[in-house]
Amino acid sequence: MKLSAQSHASIASSLREAIDKYTTDGERTIVTDIHLQPKQDSGELIIFNDDDEELSRTIIEEWVDYSEDDFYAIAERVLRGEINSLKEVGALEKLAILKPYSFVLVDEDKETITELLLIDDEDTLLLNDELLKGLDEELDAFLKDLLEK
Image 1: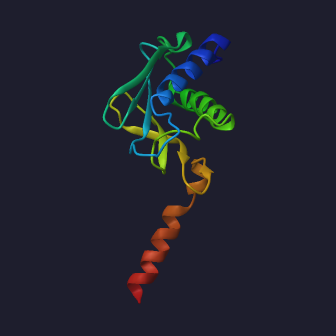
Image 2 (image 1 turned 90 degrees about the vertical axis):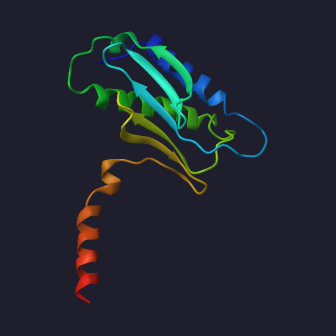
């Protein structure tokens, strides 16, 4: 699925509207993550915080009634790209949100699918499967070794 320039602009505008609610030059005082919920049946993108307070909402025409199984994979790629664009232009630097905080992709039940971006004091980390690859095996081996001693 290829999104139109208008859809990309809609997503960017909605993200800016959401983060503008947390923009300040003062002290960082808010503890929250920003959740992005794309809806496959209606084409909506809803952005909200940890308290389920809606920060922004838009309709992405290409998502309306999209029936393929790869919807969340496509939405993840598009949303991650738009969030990274905001990061590159410095739009995430003046948020009043305490670090670390995340931009999180959630499903219709508000269950986490993946973290799109983690903002931390040291560096910005992109979480992906490659980063966590083999972690279960390493932890199992460590635990086994620890229990045997």
